[in-house]
Length: 396
Ligand code: HEC
Ligand code: HEC
Ligand code: HEC
Ligand code: HEC
Ligand code: HEC
Image (cartoon, rainbow, N blue to C red; front, side, top):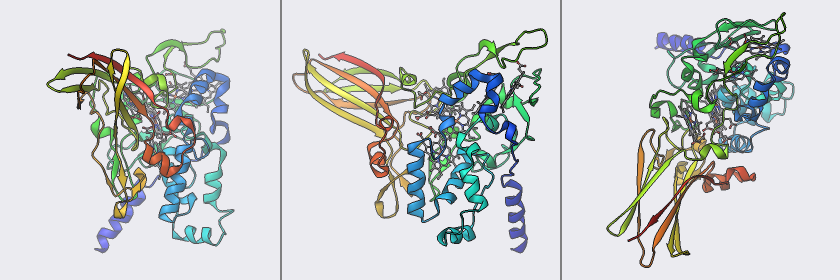
């Protein structure tokens, strides 16, 4: 028993995230602007730059709700979530002593408080997250994510896709996870996550169907001719490179949803069969727990709408005693209604007398009604319906 305990202690120590301090001249994206302006501008639009308490209402509301319901200090929850959301934070865990300090209001000058207030981490997932990863430890079990799955380069060494790049401002090293094996980089965080009760509410890596495209082909767009840095060499030239955009466009960008799914319909006996096909290599919705697809069906007689129905494809979460909750606190979840990667989902609705045609519209929503109301989310983005596709069918 003793031996086992010691081994467990050693293993935990081995896998615990090691903090490498980032010196001031590399900490924020501001320091990169003079030579990588376009990349910084692109990244500022991305939701990687909003992965912080102060910048994402949904993230903040979830953090506060988790802290309240688990009776932990807000700082302790911030540090747990920082594993993936702010992995360069300087404190990586808290203990019971800290909770006592908070209760006694003695934590003001603590290292934990300083770490969570640090302005460098308010940039969320910034340049020195992805470009300072030295190694990705895929030998660690699947629950080690974010800062617990990587080790960091020395401050000032940037890893990148080009093996012949040189910069006067920082050292450069090539890594294949920046290039031909880039999915490995995304799976550091976009893989799985579980609730405080151990329920896995997102499992992107397991559902993923490897195709000829990598995550970056779709979420950073194709390679285009441009420059990696605007710095001119001694002969006054900038170096031409094939580069991608750093916008990491995804579910929060309405236009990205257009045609993300395909819709087919036909009439059979008294029913209308609606088939949703997902050509993407991961489920839709995916990635996070309370996303929603909405299928709005309108029955028409000539030009007139005579009836309608709305079908919601989402997941609901329950705490103990069957109380509705958010994914992070769930003990159980309802059936997964998402459309599988490279797969389909078949829905059936009844035909109604008098209808001469029906119209079906498929939408996406970032947060379903239940979670929006639990967290009291105010900003319009969480309830907005983004149109994916729409189809008409003449009825016989
Ligand atoms: C004084 C100019 C300058 C500044 C400031 C600068 N860089 Fe660079 N960086 C360069 C040059 C030059 C290159 C090489 C470009 C090339 O070879 O096409 C480069 C290349 C890179 C690469 C690509 C490396 C590769 O192997 O593909 C990364 C990543 C990078 N920089 C990150 C950063 C980050 C992050 C910052 C801010 C903390 C930063 N840089 C600040 C000049 C700069
Ligand atoms: C989520 C991870 C991630 C973040 C955050 C990130 N990058 Fe990158 N970066 C990549 C990947 C992946 C590539 C390789 C893209 C490709 O195939 O061209 C890349 C490429 C680059 C390159 C080489 C040019 C190119 O497009 O290939 C530079 C320079 C660079 N990044 C700088 C930055 C700077 C500066 C920031 C912060 C504003 C930043 N990156 C933030 C993942 C990231
Ligand atoms: C260090 C962890 C981490 C890494 C590495 C990472 N991401 Fe992210 N990513 C996140 C988090 C956390 C968010 C959500 C931020 C928020 O919404 O506040 C996110 C958001 C996104 C989004 C926006 C999703 C949406 O719902 O709009 C896309 C797209 C994305 N990431 C793609 C990528 C790709 C592609 C890679 C690999 C090149 C990558 N990410 C690497 C943690 C990471
Ligand atoms: C063939 C293109 C393609 C590839 C490859 C791809 N995606 Fe997507 N992804 C999409 C489309 C299309 C959507 C839906 C519209 C949107 O959100 O961009 C999406 C949505 C997402 C979302 C939001 C999901 C939701 O339901 O809220 C995340 C997060 C994401 N992708 C991450 C990734 C990661 C990480 C990888 C690699 C493991 C990846 N994607 C590979 C096309 C792709
Ligand atoms: C294992 C890594 C990981 C951990 C740990 C983690 N997250 Fe996330 N989280 C992600 C990724 C990746 C995304 C982006 C997925 C997407 O957009 O579909 C995300 C997205 C979110 C979103 C959706 C944000 C938006 O703008 O739509 C919320 C809310 C969130 N996380 C809350 C939390 C909270 C609170 C914690 C701590 C209790 C936490 N997360 C811990 C990886 C993680």
